[in-house]
Length: 77
Image (cartoon, rainbow, N blue to C red; front, side, top):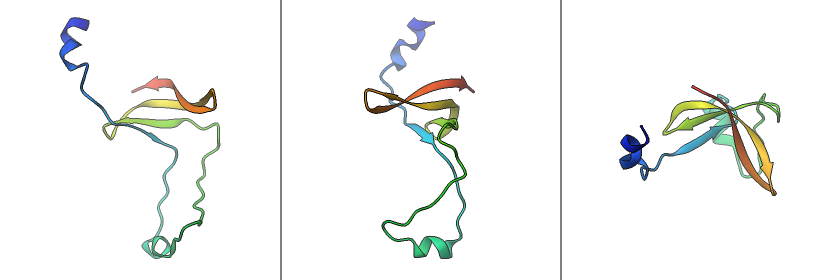
């Protein structure tokens, strides 16, 4: 199986993490300025949605590794 995938190993994929989503009316968006806050109903320990090329790939959790953020995959779709 690994040999069959060898030719694809250099393809780059866009990895995105979704911390939260929120809908705002256009009137509110037009009033936003630098320094404004948008709050989300997400707790720090909440899982994140992991996307590959805009498609859901799995669920993960943020971790800290040597003062840098990382992601631990918890479940794959």
